[in-house]
Image (cartoon, rainbow, N blue to C red; front, side, top):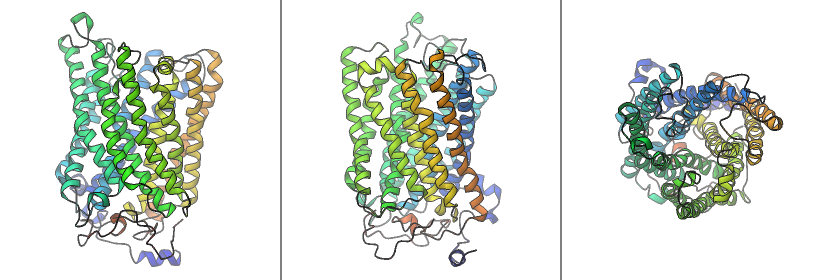
Length: 546
């Protein structure tokens, strides 16, 4: 052990939430938000591996033009289950339930979340929802597509829809309870001196996300209940033969699912807004604009759902209104990218692993956002909406955005969560491999979509094979980059260097307590006297570990 590590070993706290003397049972009955966050990390990591396995099988099928690996119905089930697991059981809960659960109370100087028992119940509710949905998969799978579009989802030929939809509906209550917990905590449990405009952007973003969770998720639950009622009782809600309207389902589904995009991506914005100032050693440029842009995104997210429906028969005037609103919602997202870039300008930049992931996020999300403007234009959207252009756009926003931000956050706060440092060389290599593999996988799909290759087909014309081979090869590279952190982070739990309380010399209350934090976060409630990103006042020499 190095001299630095020996010195830091003396700082390693013993009375922490990771204390093994509490026993395994205490983890499953805990009301400590930090332990619950760890339970979520383990749970959604398992979900991610399962969803990633199905993605790998999809790419293997598309390696050749002929559908020679799976039958068409099996392929339908694969992409349906991949979408269901990744969207509802990984992307939606990922950052709020893990990093949000762990950090939000500490960032505002609170002992815990407002409702600790509800917090634990939220994790159990997610597990119950997963049991229903994965049971549907084991029972033969779901082949309606992850969006459950009618009439596909209301036909009896479609398999196990009700069981899968029930699981998603139950998991939605986990999101609602988490959002309610965050809202009350931010309003009622801030430390003395922690005014609204001293809150970290991480807290602002999770507050905005929580509002969307509480308001939008019940709409999805109601929609899935209506699908189950139509299948079971033949009530004419969506079926035209019974007097229903299939387009009504799309309105209801996207009224939730477009705000859900921001449930997934706003927490990613939050992570990047913490990392950029730290590794640029500068105040976050335009703090107020970044904070209010999170609220604006949450509000505008409820007003643009029908841009998913330009080919569904909406009127020309409706299409124009929603097209204009979609261009408007790009403005607050652009504000964030501009302010991150301005923060980097003339900064003392340190290219540690979290910063590499943050820079990758900016590049990938910018591509995803700009291609979203293509889809906001009605004429272009009509041409590409049923093609692989949509697949590429969605993954640049969700995987290139949320997933990369999640990895950035996990690397940034891993020393705080565990008290250990991970090895920097393999971590930096993983960030580079992930960035390269992601672009190799999904950028060719923009070209495929523009050329007219339809999505959700397991066979395709031979002229599309070269780009599909490139995409599948890129997926192999991406898989390596995504799996590497699992190994070196687990290794670090035992062999990693002791981190110390603040290895990155970051601002924020979470860095003022021990690593890992004590059971109640702080030995004394802190009093906040300065702004969130006061890096310029740090006069001592900056030490970046790595």
